[in-house]
Length: 82
Image (cartoon, rainbow, N blue to C red):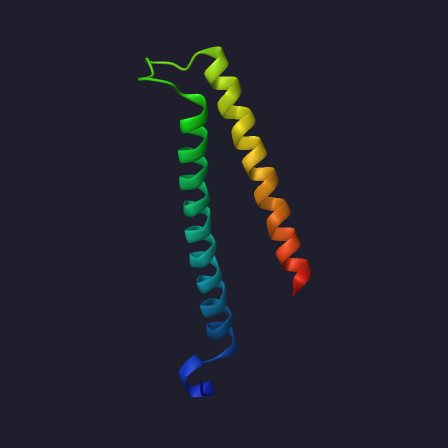
């Protein structure tokens, strides 16, 4: 694309930052959706009450922690491949 299209340097930086932020937001949204689906199915049986039991809370916490650890490990591996 031409310099005319992108405009000034500050404008270019703003466009790049905005694109990255939107991509990051989408990725985070997808991760939260996957985490919720996986951990809910694993930790919650039946219809929950108004509060989670201590067993359900511990399971959800551990599941979310493992999910984030694995996600970070995968991202680091992918970044090291580039």
